[in-house]
Image (cartoon, rainbow, N blue to C red):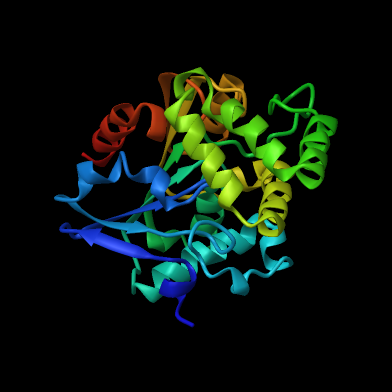
Length: 265
């Protein structure tokens, strides 16, 4: 099976520069549909689903490979290789994909021109006194226990939390549908890899420039997380979006489009 089929890769647009969009946990490439049209005339757009998400080939899901974020970073590199991309890729990631993009850039810095991160977090866990990730370990263990006991109930609980005030209604509904349509086994593996990853030690290894798009009110990634990333990522820029939620690319796409445009010029 080809990588392009495995990861449900879509390529379109008319530019020479490549914008690669990567979705967050429980999501799929369709979450970017409000953003990508703005760049079709100026860039080649690459969309994909991580194995286990969206319309990827579920039978290729390996619970060992995908128990760590490195496995998802390898998906990114595999897709780039399949498309013969060797340099100047602008990687736009949401949530956990920001960490995935960092890992991919560390593995192959020459491949990427820059990273654009929407709602990033190098670790969701609090580590007092120096780091406030937003969650205690028992909170996240409880969330994963709910996932095991009542998957649909978990999806209906988490989607409004992720959407935040800005995304109540349509965005929350889209997230619920996406969560519910994701294979529960693959989702559990991705959830544990996402919520218990700690990539703070990787930040000094990131060599490419990065733009951090932080939501002003985000229950998954507090303002302190964006500030921490900015302090520890060399050649980074922090921009706070006036959004209450974790998915500005869905709830306030024009803010994200504008930020990306400013970064690319």
